[in-house]
Length: 483
Ligand code: CTP
Image 1 (cartoon, rainbow, N blue to C red):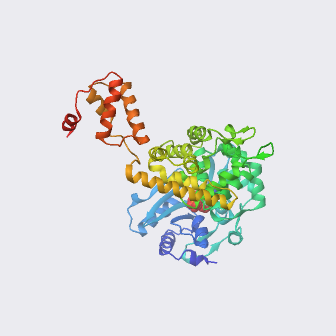
Image 2 (cartoon, rainbow, N blue to C red):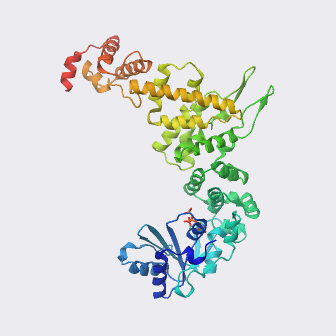
C-alpha cells in the first residue's frame, strides 16, 4: 500500500505545497486523486482542499508556475478556482461544511475544518486527504478507514448513509457507478439505504443521472452495475422500460427467454468488442419492445413480431426522457435496433444478392456496428448452436464483402438524381421525381441494373414516359451539358 508521500510524489504537489506555505494556508490533496493513486489508476484531476480561500491559493499556485492571473478560472458562487498546469487539472476549494435542505439541491455553505470537509464527502474511499505543507508533508488523513475499504473492495458512506445520500441523492447512482467501475461490493448498510431512499433521486436532474448511467454502461462488465441498480430499485425509477423486460411466461409448456437477463448478456458481449457508448446503448435497447409485441401462437410458440420496428420507434422518446442527445447518435441507435434481426434472418435463408445489397444499402456506415450487435445477440446456452450461428455470420459477412467489392453499394447514392430527372424532362419539383428515383433505386438493389448512367438512363426514360413525360436530352447530350 502506498504511503502518503508516495501518493504525492509528483513534483506538482511539492510546488502547490510551497505556494500554500508562502500564504500560510493548510492544504491537502483529497478525494479521487488519492483513491486512484492507491489503486494505481492514472488520474490527471487533482482536488486541493485548504483551510481558507481556495481562490487565494489557486492564485498563489499560478504565481508559483509563472502563469498569468487570468489562467485561474474563478467560480465565486462556489468558492472554487480551477487552473491547468501542463496536463494536470487542478481544482481548489476552501474546506466547507455544507448542509442541504431536504427538498432542494441548494446547499447552505459555511467555512469548515478539514474534518468537516471529509465528513461531507460521498464514500470512505473518496474521503482521504494527504497534506501538502512542508511541516506535515505526506501525512495521510484517513478518518473513515478508506484504505481498509479499498483493500476489501467496499463502497461505504463515511457517515450514516441516510445523511450522506440526502446531502446529495446523486450519490446513490455514484455508489453503483464506483462499485461497477472498481468491481467493488456495496456495504450492506449503504445498500439498504439505497433501497430505502431511492425516491430521493427525484430532485436530481436527468442529465446528471444519465451521466452516471453512461459511466456504468461504459464499464468492463456493465451487467454488474445494472443488476445492482435493479436490486436497489434505482433502475425501476430511472429506466422502467428496461425492468419490464423481466420475466418468463409459459404456455403449452413452452417458455421464452427472460429478456432482461438476455439483454444484459448482449450488453456484456458487445462490451467485449467495443467501447462505443452508442453501440452499447443499441444493445440495451435492441429488444426493448418485446414486452409489447409478445404473443403466443398455438402450436408454434412465442413470437415478438415487429419488435425491432416498434423498438426503433421508441428510441427517441426514451432518449428524450433520459436526456440523451437527440442527434445522429440517437439515429445510429435507432438504425441498429431497427436492423438487428436482418443479418440473422439472412444467415438462416438462402442468401440472395439482392438481400445482401439491401442490407448494405440500409446499414451504410453502420454495418460493422450492426454485425457486432448481431454477434453479441447470440446468447444461447447451447454452445454448438452458438458456434453454428457464428459460422453462418462469417458466411454472411464474406458474401457482404463480395457484393460490396463488386457493386460498391455501401452508402451508395444512385447516379440518377432528382436534379438530373428535372433537367432531362424539363420539369419542376413534383411527385414524379420521387417515383422515378424509387424505381431506379429498387432496380439497383434488385441487381437488375448497375449503378451507372448507361444502365440507369434507359430505365429513367422508360419510367418517365410511363408518367407521360418526354426527355429533352439524349444521354450523350446530357453528359456533354454537365461536363
Ligand atoms: N464528491 C462527493 N459527492 C459528490 C461528488 C463528489 O462527495 N456527489 C467528492 C468525492 O470526495 C470525490 C470528489 O468530490 O472524490 C471529486 O468528485 P468527482 O470529480 O466527481 O469524482 P472523482 O472521485 O474524482 O471520480 P471521477 O472522476 O471518476 O468522477
